[in-house]
Length: 409
Ligand code: GAP
Image (cartoon, rainbow, N blue to C red; front, side):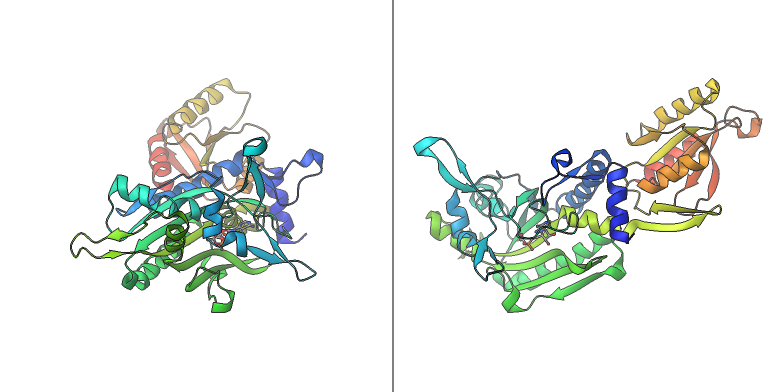
């Protein structure tokens, strides 16, 4: 089995990602996130939110509607140009069309093909309500839809997916500095989520291949098992969008410099990250096979901040009530640090560890007779076992709490 098939199989078997509506034979280009996938996805978004919005003083969050007045997509050029070639050479617009409202009143609308549009059309609302100074940006996480002609490669190319996007408004002369700043942050984010550096590459997109709105684009490419392909994009969108929306709507979308009184249309730098492709790159980066204790094992070397389950607590024996009671107490204590603490008392300890290794749980904590005081000097200490190395330490419960706290930040 190739590594991609192994990852798809693990994702399904362990509750990360399932084929969409599988009992009906699926629906091409759709995937459903299961319990562990939801947690992993939450952590990926949360870290993006922290690094791209909360840690900065110049970023404002948005959550715009998926349906927009169709004029917005005319203005942005998507109605005319967001098309892929079919086998016969004709062009096929990949925006999903739907109708909003009933009967005569019904309006042909689109499911947004990118989250960006919802931010551009709110430029004036944010200016009027928040009074930001240039440079500033809007950021949002949300679903996007494209009727891809050939969805494929697991969650790489879907018809319904999620984006984490920033539209960063700058004075035209400042675009290069801002471009570099976001480029650096994207690399830092890749590092934090555990995307391996060796597999991440930048591609300067040549002008003939850039989107219609872009004057410079860098694709962040990743070496997936099926080839080196786009992970994220960083684009200089110039004043294309604000100018186009101003023209189409008749509403002025400009910025007035308080000091000089100069009126200008800000230019835009756009770091655009797909949530699902990020998750795929993380899974590919984390997937490991090795041998431990004379047996083959599979584990996900996920950074602790990203791992869906942070620790597993286990009584050495499940039929000893004193051990179970103490282990439950320890679990309750650790849950004060993070809710994502698993419990496993099934089978032997080695098997329990393997099950956690496979889902990327960084720590396993075992409660034994020494915890209860069989050796008085070890009372209230537990075994902490590390996922990647299998190494074990004897620590007090307070020390374990502190370790956990530090690891998940
Ligand atoms: N607003 C800019 C924009 O949408 P894009 O390069 O078309 O640019 C940005 O998309 C990111 O969205 C991609 O780099 C990728 O991570 C993700 N993405 C695009 N199409 C996708 C699809 N069909 N399935 C999964 N992710 C997709």
